[in-house]
Structures are given as structure tokens and as C-alpha cells.
Length: 110
Length: 113
Image (cartoon, rainbow over all chains, first blue to last red; front, side, top):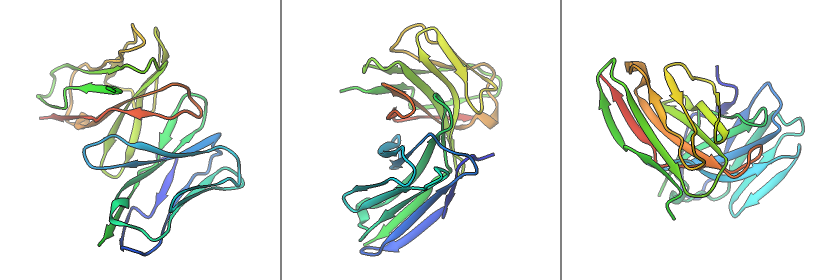
């Protein structure tokens, strides 16, 4: 059973368009992270959010943590082909176990 | 700048064989973990360790053993390989946890026939 549900599973857009990826759970996270993974490599951390309602920006990427700390979203503005990859959300439900969602495969067409 | 090193990168086993996936990190991280990644299922935690001599189970521990005799190394043992263990395995380490940034190795692709 997946503790974290990500949607959509796949997303294909044209360069310059915007996109949003969602991460939801019925449980409360103590903190949540977003990772990006490219083929043949391990995931790389993009951001960590800790406080309910928190918004963090990383260039064209905006991350939001829900007020109740049960959901999060990743928004990419004016997507570029370099944004192509697998985006994974991950939540700490206790101190030591980081659980991942199934991921969203994003393809940005030039 | 080695970071997290996993070996081997590729391995093919027959059902019933045993093997060890090696993981080493040179960042003096106390926290290490093993995940498996399967299509459509993201990464699932197998085992983790918060320091030398301390290990605990994750979400999918059956069929796997770990030990942590040093801070640097965290090997994953498959006792009797099964086709269901065909997967890509990732080792990760972190300086701290909750929250802590996980640094991943490049993965080990295992096929069990």
C-alpha cells in the first residue's frame, strides 16, 4: 500500500507550458521532500518542506506544503526540455523512515 | 568526490542463489538505507541503519539481510534469490534524518531468472 499518492503518473507537455504535480496522503507528514531522478541515476533532492502552508521557490519550480501537512504540490513554470525526468515526493512519517510516492514521469517536448 | 558507491552495477542470478550488494559512503554519514525501485511503485524502503551496529526493517524487508559493522559500509544480502526480487536497488546515506537529504548511489540492477 502506497502511503503517498502522486498524480498524474505521466505528464507530457510542450516547452514553455506550465505543469503541476500533486502528492497526497491520508497521514500527516513531519516533513516532505521532492526528488528528481534521471535515467540510470539515483534521485537528487530538490527541496525539503517542514511547516504547514510553506511555499518554496527554486528558480522556475514552486513547492507548496498543505496547511494540514498531508499534501504537497510541485509547479514548474515555462517548462524546458531539461526539466524532463521522474519527480518523486517523499515523506517522513517518523524519525527514521522516508517513504516515497510512485513518481510522476515528466516529458517536456522541444 | 566518491559519495555513495554501489557494486555491482548489474547482476544476473538464478533462483535460489545468494549474493551481496555492496554499498560504501565516504561522507561520514550515520544514516544509511536500502531501497528497491520497481516500475510504477516508486522507491520502497528495505532496511535502514542509524549508525554502526544498529539496523532496522523498512517496508519490504523479507528475503534481505543487512549489517552495519562500520560507518562507511552497509551491505545488503539476498539469502535465496527469487524472481520477485528482480529490481533496481539503491543505497542512500544522510548526515541527519527527518529531515535529512538522502544522497543516493547510482543503483544496482538485479535480474533473477
